[in-house]
Length: 623
Image 1: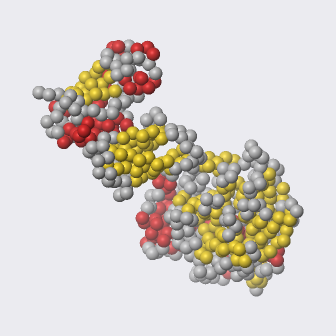
Image 2 (image 1 turned 180 degrees about the horizontal axis):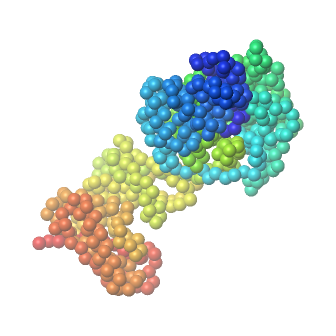
Image 3 (image 1 turned 30 degrees about the vertical axis):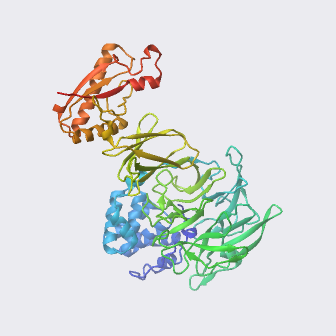
């Protein structure tokens, strides 16, 4: 994220003073006053004049870190760490390396950090799961990301929120006139709006003149009825700031303000009682019922640089701030909360395991479970933040500096539904744990495999667009196959009842469901393997049993080719059984080609007819 975030992210650091000297005094004052751009110039002058030491290198790296100049921060952290540094320096360097995609080097820095601060929750998380990046990369894709055409090519645009009357509000530094922030060297933030039509096309953005001032305004949050807005504003506007003596600095904090819609215009602006001259309160998000306001703040008694808090709202009466605690907050930095209609809290964090910079996480407030990273479709090695979603229009927006400047991106939710599988024994009605559950698409391509838990239960999240097949197997039981039709997002429960397999043995054969093969192929499919595992179990229970595998094809192709293909299928089936521990002397195989079809449809076979004819049979050989 660009320099503007050094102010609005609220991540204020107080330096310890260790290593300061007369040469760095001017630069240190600039740094301590959060004037990182000027501090960089001052520290670089010391480097140029050969007056720099490892303290200066660290301060220079930290300054670049705060304005998210990753390449320069990495360069100076590396130089600073040629000598001993504190644990936090190793942590920050690790974050920088992750932002560069250098995860191996980042892990080494996290190893050092963890040794120095083993009780830190970030250290514990690293030690428990150091190689988490591949796991994050496997997170199911839940959104499709698209560019939006309202971004400014050079200025920051972020914090987009879509109201229920189809107006997209966001903040931007795009205006080319007025005051400039002396710290960030950029224009102050203003609130903008863009009308979204039914096709999702956004109109040319317009500034929200009734709310914008000459200082920072935004980001915003709007109530479900569109009549009340909560927004951040720079304290300078209200004359609320502290003068820092000897530095000529008026230090104003961000606060949250409330506005109401009056005859089509925003007015009746009032400050919330949680605002303070001593700390920042920003990034508001109001719940759909209007009763809870979430926000970010570095107020006292937090867990990290900035935390996410909440207050109750009752008209113009507000409760006391409540910290969301360690389930959400870390010793790092959390910000940009957004509470959705279904009570999912989205927020940005640099203190949790992510791809680099800020990552976006989601937290189910009702379930109170561990927050989940949104995965690498949304998150990158740069800063990703300010996620919001409108459930009515099924569209979300988030911000990222993946292109080098803060831009707004559209996130279109991919419809998914949960398929819950419950497994019981047919005869005893007892639950069956550790049953093997696989889910396949309509072409029998395996998607995932899991086991039932101690309650005989497991679940899958799958796309709404397709049909699926659930295969349930357990040693000693007959496999059950259950089709699952496409859904519009509703949860589907599959109750699978398994029958003991010994009832599958007749005088002449072991009756399995057909071992189907794909057209023109002889490899064992996932569904076929589940069936053959039942035969393995039966043959182990009956050590004297011998089986002749007879394999059949459909009627497509020439007879000679079909005979050869069926022989391959029979051999493939036998080899699978041998691989599972069945001695080869107990098995024989024969290809039948298309000579004994199960469905004698000749030249009028349907796809289903052909599939049923591609099968294997298991005859018991008696001596």
